[in-house]
Length: 328
Image (cartoon, rainbow, N blue to C red):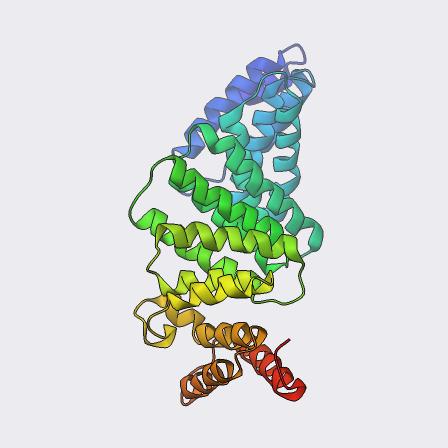
């Protein structure tokens, strides 16, 4: 009734209408099942009619309406309002870090399942920004989780350099915070697997493999007795042409990965034998290379093959050595 009276009075100032709308919104939000989108849209419109273009109140109104739409399932309609809010916060003379973080996070949640290239790239930037914005109030574990998630997204699209840089940054955040226990162990396992998955892809260039080596070495130095980390490091060294160093790493693998406890080792098996076959072929040790191939066949008998492309590559490398009558 108050709103109706205010709207009927052409001389009524906008701020009184805004105040009445805010009161109505408070009541609606306190009522289970009430739909407040009409009130929020009116607030958005009145705010834009009253405040100057550089006012943070416009950003807040756009954020409020956009978040409400998203949280009530209208994702497509929320996107332009959330983008408007971000643009206005960015243009404001003073940073509204917490609100920018909330807006960035909400926009990411809305867009994360889209598959068009432009939105995928935008989501990557949103995750990076969430990490930067949250650096002053997120815990090191939360920062590391964001960076690990970003690394996964980047790896899935073939951006291996940025994926490795991201997970190395996340690992360093935990190291700098002197983190211990499951948080650090989990990230270390993920970093090892990412390093291995990058390095097992041939013909990527030394810059990629050097980063993979750095990630694998960072994990291996912290857990020197972990066979999977030794294999990941050996894989990267092999790609860099450092065959003697790779062979030295493989010496640390006392038991086959297929017989080692732990999911990380089991997911990589029989990479220890595949890498071993290739390394010893390059070192012109035909007997050792063929023995490693034989162990692969033993592992594959009745078992799931985890790294088929690496096994095929190992067979080709050893076959080429046999045909040529020596190593390569």
